[in-house]
Image (cartoon, rainbow, N blue to C red; front, side, top):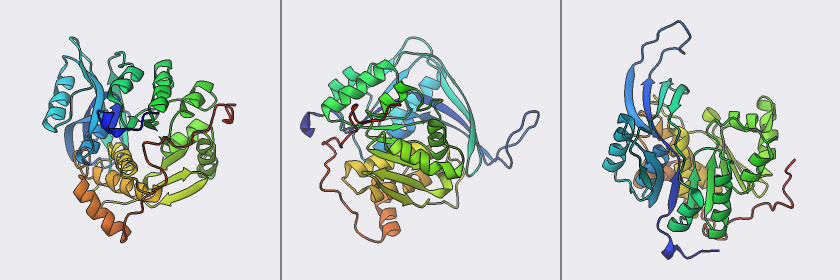
Length: 338
């Protein structure tokens, strides 16, 4: 296992598509077919995996983002924003054809509905990218279980790279053995409560504990976001519940989940305890709701100030599990694959 940080080209590799988000925020009521609702505000902001990469960059992490860009105006816009924000371009690919990727987000203060479109483009093979960049952490913003991803996850294990995977409303269930195989190679899985219920087939609030137990049996660390109810994390059979951090000026939750994950990864890289990682994540997620997209993502100094106010104690470090030592993963022999 490669554990020498000196040979690593970056701390974090984010692998996922860009999106150009057309965000209508401040809606007085949900939009129904046959009706028209005026928004209080509108913004064209970069989104998708950009939100994760930019939030991590703003927190002071050395991050590379694997993404594809084309000749279309949406690619041009997001690429210009990435350059303006100072994101490193070492994992970008540029194509001589359109690679449109856009979302229309209809956002109220606490939820949103989205319509998306994406031109198909083959993603960069993950394993060679990991071998070249050797990141400490690989972040996948979407649940993926295709062959290339599974090969990449196995490569990450060999390199000692921690894998953090979100779900991102992907239509999948644990009834698919391939989904279970992919999750068994993930270190930290971060679905929201609705995604956890759908993945496991559990029903309603009473079934969430069952969904958490089922997913925690597959991954070493499970983090389930619950919106206004905060977040739940399970590691080594121990459960931690974190309350939400609400903002009085919330206008757009579109990038809250991505910024939550950025705060979580930031804490893991710093060696903080899981409860303190959750605290950092909830603060980062809440801050993102105060402006369209991820434009209000916290920097490291502001996060430190907010953590001081929230915790009112020194941060708790986890000295017995360095990040460059992959945590225990259930083996194929002991994992219940159905």
